[in-house]
Image (cartoon, rainbow, N blue to C red):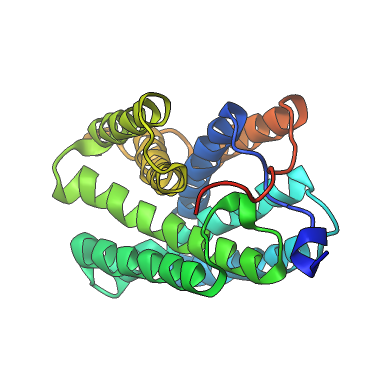
Length: 254
């Protein structure tokens, strides 16, 4: 038996519960990132440094873990999505790249990472994440996708003119199409997974912005810290009550 075969999967099985927690985590990433960079006034660069440091520490612990640990996994996801929020805002706003340019650049990063992952290991299926190398590709891809999602969400709401609520409904609609493709067609499951995974981030970004942006900008003007605390509590409760198990075997299509 080779080393990869003995390496236990430390990412969760893809279930309805996974997607519910993922959307909440991406929404928390938006409100949490904005809390640090805007409400606390630390700015996008400092916010990125804080959340990226937390993410790198958690990712290292996650990779060194001996088995799937739900709270560790979701804490790492939340750290990556908050880092993605502040990184995207720093690139599109502070550096002046803009939402369109930032989205294009980050999409290229996501596609390049997925391409390198497939070239290196022969698959990008999450069920194949059974080695440290695969885990690194997994988390790098996730971080780029979280950052991309923030930029795309902002682009849809602002440049695209959809507004925060309109953007949220638009991304939810696209995700609904992906669900139909999953159940009604034989479309490649790996492609559908990564498409849905990436699109849950702009959905969370637009929902988060809708919750905490001023009423004059189309939001509800809720307190960012309170919204973040409520979302964090909801995630904690769901991780405790919903079944959490590691992903399956590596037999999924490449």
